[in-house]
Image 1 (cartoon, rainbow, N blue to C red):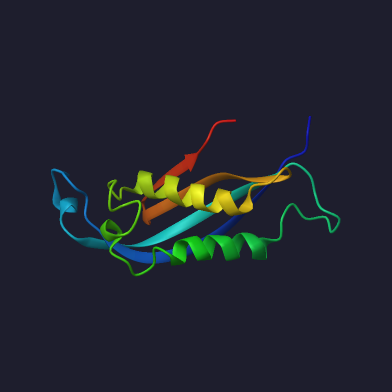
Image 2: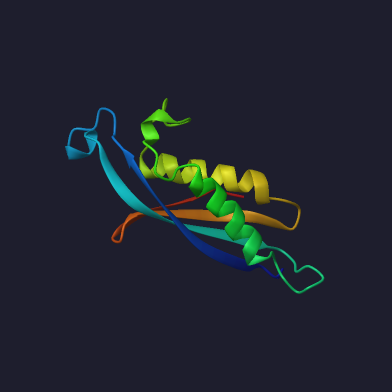
Length: 127
């Protein structure tokens, strides 16, 4: 069985959104303090014995989250076209981080986006 290492980092951001066509209170402008968990899987270790440097994963995760921080999400791509639901946001964050991190040895396994302390969505793609 091949070795696999799962690395996880956490970051956060604050933003506001409103859910278009939602039949409840969330259709109105409201905000969240989002928490983002990024899981990266490594199939092998580098010459230092690391799957990937945590600092690099954190840097990319913070950069992507920073693009959403203190923003009204409905006004920025892609959420100016698609509803800024937690599910759509998790998929977007995953794609943006994967674009920068994925290579032949490491890839983003999943992104978990916490909307509140009690509610989250985990996005991943099948192999």
